[in-house]
Length: 349
Image 1: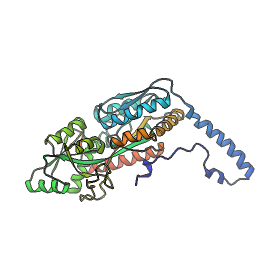
Image 2 (image 1 turned 180 degrees about the vertical axis):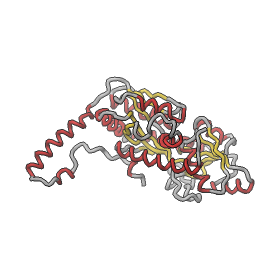
Image 3 (image 1 turned 60 degrees about the vertical axis):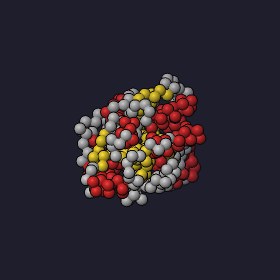
Image 4 (image 1 turned 135 degrees about the horizontal axis):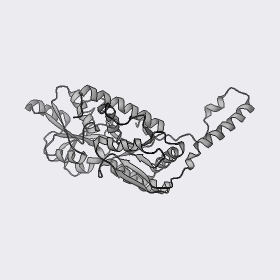
């Protein structure tokens, strides 16, 4: 079942029921209630905020990846709803730090927003703790969760392993380390591989970081690297086309996109659940007006059947959230990734 923070829970646009439990005479409660509701309505009237110039959507990665696909799928309908062009700005490099620094330093007026992969955003809080030029949780205003894609473990078709157990057993028999690829240090693929290494204990595994998910995938297809964790959507076509073999999916239940692929739990790794996820962030101190309008607009776009269909084809499970739910989710991800990073003694070279 999808966690609560992945499901859309609309912001309250009127006073909640708890207000009417005030212990006061009925007429007084009614008068105060009207006054407070009017004040609240004035506060949230920022929903009437309308942008008067193009909005820049900053991505921490180069064109072509899943993040880029998500951004370009939602940019059109979001632009139509807001009445202004959404300019997708790819700012790859530095493990996402370059783009996130740009967002953190931007004027908090609603005209600069960002769509990071939340795994790397969370991991950098620990990996680059001493040098990170921003605070992962304090320097950004969460707007809404956007979606997630479970990670799937793939190997090249020339690899004889049909399961993760076979891959590990073969490594132990031959004494040859298992090499696992990723698009960079601290990304979800890297953390997932390190978690396998921690849980398998006796397994001899070596991380091979590439400069992006595309080259990492090519390395596995070419046999230069043994395995790779990747979002389902980014490798689905390659698996269906017979260029990669999926041997385990890191979701609680089997993926409907790959029903014949065992879960990590079924593969001997209990409670091994990992997904790449995305959320819309803005600079901290974003005023209530643009914050609410951006949230409501994107939440509406994420409910449009055509958007849901196109993202589903990319293996992305769409879901919006309240800003607070996204803030709590990021905090949880920071703690989860910190635990693996510390236990695995992962360092940025």
